[in-house]
Image (tube, rainbow, N blue to C red):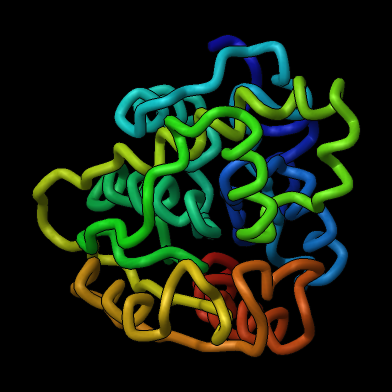
Length: 252
């Protein structure tokens, strides 16, 4: 894959802390770009662009987590020499976790913190049927029911043709993902979830505490799987507070 994992100009400021953000299945970096104006300027929000969407729409998306993480970590490594944290939502939470595992313990590139949202702890088995092998019509209706795309989008066939391969690939990544055995992370982990999320219960979210030897914190918000859309005030304040220690240490 030759495309850039970041948009031109990202990860170039002198902000003390970079926050690399990984989207839900089928999502793009645009989901996180509004966060730049909402989080403190000491935090540079860096949305990650996966193959098969946005500026990389013509690239073949990955369908296996190991292949994705190998390429992603190689591409991001030059940007990880400055202090950074990772945020992932839904499938992106698993991606962020695997990036954290890859660099945890690296004296130059270890993450300061992992923030996960809207996904069951990685060691838990799936509790819903697989979507990746459904025919297109059934697959798209299932994603609509999850709240992943508005139903009216399905009327735009050319748009569907463009985003469907990346969406299917992301579901394949998620549904075939099995974390390898390994030690827990050493960095702090914070988990965030919507109380009415049909994909994960607060209890299942709380089991992310097993992924780290460091501090763990969980916060539950009113809302469904996309409780975080547009970065509502309570989540905005909690993210800023969660990252404040990392910002202060990085700026010292």
